[in-house]
Length: 397
Image 1 (cartoon, one colour):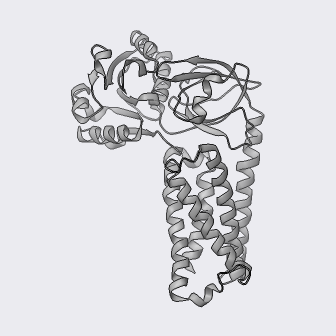
Image 2 (cartoon, one colour):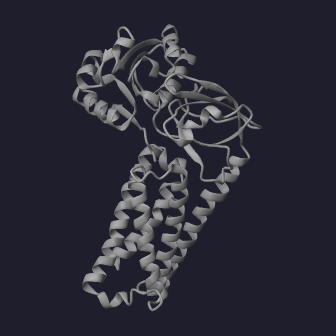
Image 3 (cartoon, one colour):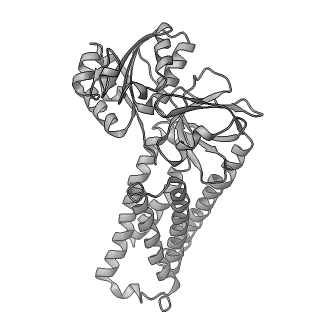
């Protein structure tokens, strides 16, 4: 019984973690909150599975008939809830291996989670143990009301607010490396105030009420009023369509989010490490530093396969004149760019290029997960305190 109650409450709390409350996520970054949600959801499912297994092994008579035509409604609801959460967890962990597209998965994820928790509450109320006494009954009533209010806020109130603050596509600019920059202008409002390095959920060619939002880093300077830029690489079905977006189309944003920002730390110098399109939030930082006239030393270590894959290469070079900026390109095909480092980001490479006073550095890393992990471990091994290494998890979903 205790395991079953713990599973129900923990599953209900997952809706809070994914509701994108800024005050909740601000200390950690919403990418960390989402990863915590993944682990907690698996933990809650294991509790639910343990609840069922204990009954099956120790009290099989309490489960009744397996046939839903013969079993009481609340027992069938419990089995259906277990099935919903099993499908939810499996489809989330192995979404890419199962080749489930992001947008259908989002719809399935929401429907399975709402259906699963609803069935779990039906099961809990039908069994009646520890839920019919006045105190316990009041707790579950409040739990249910708050859960319903949370769903209304996330799926109705928040999209309605976004609908009243639209953006219009100003232009789509082609970049190198199969990337493009989407330039948005606010319509009828002042736009988004953000810190350099933060990101937002973007909805295009759909209503904010649809399940068609995608997270992207803001690449523009935080000092620019109104206009926003998102530099995005074609890595999937949705991102491949971005070059076809036309000026004048509407867009909607939910943001800003994230704790990955130079504005959150005090530093005499910065080390920025990027891989591929991980340059987007780094570009926001560099542009902001330039607009502010900040002369603190900046080292950019930027990894790509070859020269043609270096996104924003010409602008990065032009920023040298406005910043105390050193750029180290790391290419798997270094012959395409004279002076580039060969191979991948590694401890040995960082040992050569990092300043000697490493304990005072603030380091920001964004890129594919393997690169991110290697860079984190290398920086730690080279004497940079881990509290001064800030990573943006590249793949939220």
